[in-house]
Length: 242
Image 1 (cartoon, rainbow, N blue to C red):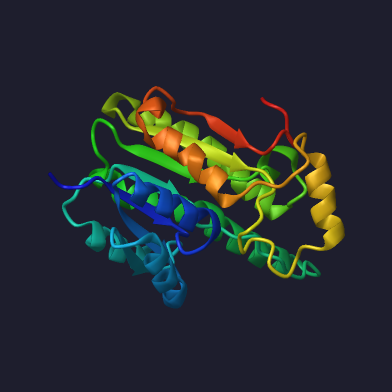
Image 2 (image 1 turned 90 degrees about the vertical axis):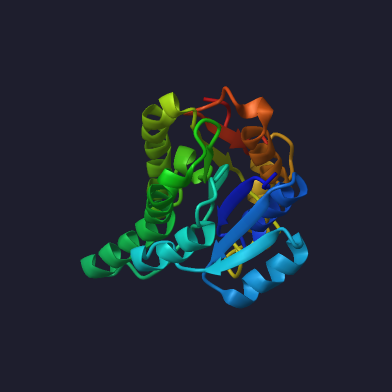
């Protein structure tokens, strides 16, 4: 019997790598997708023989075909749209504002839209799972263009769930809080910023990529089969349930 197949974008580091490793441990073959081949190579070694890598910028329609070709004629059981980034820049002119917003939307929204659209014909029916990675910034603000882009995923997943429910495909968003052991804050986090984020949590600590992967385990597994069109908050109580 052929193994189940999962595709994880942004799978080379942090939440994506932890998620891919968890899925491999659950018996999935996993295709991890990212822009940096050396990072993907290291991730494949860490995940194990069930992992393969595709180097692609999934905001570029021409490069998406590499992932589709890697999937081939196999059904996709789980698609985790995890690719995204916080993009900083100078907002001195309207042109600079426009460029940063376009880049942020491309990185965080278009990546999910293009990858999902390309793999829709391959998703298992019934039983396919689509999971998008958002951010606490979508719910409390403070991230400017990044907050707006991640919030757009919430509306997008509601639309996906509505379209695909009759096919037995679920679509959900996981919205992480402050997660350490990832590249997201590289070069941007100060000790004061870390302390402020930890203190904002009811649990007085940061989260880990593995804890986000555990939420994916639930949504992808039998326990998540009746969960769709939901925003799953994993934030230590920094933003209360809504």
